[in-house]
Image (cartoon, rainbow, N blue to C red; front, side, top):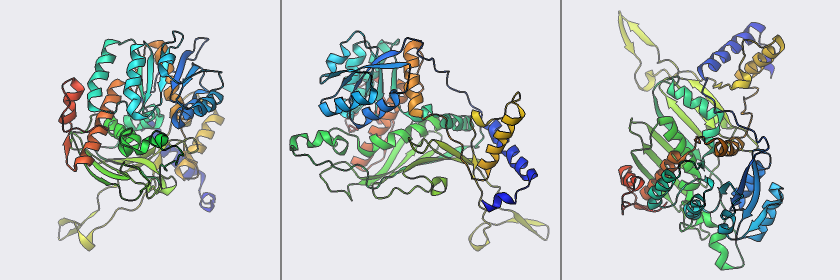
Length: 467
């Protein structure tokens, strides 16, 4: 904090002006305004009241354009706990078919283990319900085309997949920067979601319940790290690059955790995209260190790299909000002139490295200075921009993207809008997860063409594994 005492008013205004320039560069198209309930909330039921279902209910409790009428889970303790979480005195079911048969339920939120995503989504869809399904949208390659056909036949129903980064203002701002060329030619992305130790096996007295209680750790029920973690970040890459990958290669192993699981406990992947862009991704269970953001965060984040700049970004969580930092690409090393001849530094000891730089926070609407604002409001925003530039504060997203994605789902149910995380996004994401596991299982490079015919409705390629 001592450095702040040495800053002059002119220095403060100069930094504020620089931050204002970033504001202008990162303007983006905002999502449509959320339509509040206005006495007509979407009546929904939630199927799968486990850890993820209860987490969503905590967020749904504060959203006023949806009202929970029913819960379904095979575990009575889960039902009772989640009923208290949502606080709407919902009906409780053990069989999801009873829930979706109710005529007074408009929409269904599906938060069951991955292997049940498609069959329950299918039944709810055929029952005429709007569906919000957690990622990955499907488990097997043959489910891709069938779900596409189902949704095409009922265009008035809304299907949304739980990829909340699509609903983050920071991610939308960075996508706009990519599209407008602010980062130059975007060539690479790095993604990481490391945990230590990650999911732990829950020992049960009844061995028959062991696998279902620990479903994420078994390939019969789960897509492992690719489906549970990488799915979020490969979706970011497909969004930023504007295309699914054309090929995937990787290495992984079941090397460190021997508790009965059969999923891999570490995977490292490289995805190649049609415009020669690459995503390098890592998922470990032996470290939670994150080198992004000056190591002030742990576990997960992404770095989007272009010829004129890079962005470090994370969606955050309930305790640490989403944020993004922009780094301008430094100029090339200077050249020297000898006897009138220019010579660039090229290698070894003669290489001149660019000096370290401090990232510039990306600003959102609440920190932008408008033309009609009063003096006090302007000064407050300039002060925040100054503090951001000095690293004393960081801009934060005003809402958790989980809240935004759920509220947007209900809004689209009423308006007939098309979700940001729609069927196209969900199927492409699931296909990439399936390809990822195929590459790991068979220790080979796999191509998008192997899954593309499954998405079009042809028989699935026999080389493809389920996710």
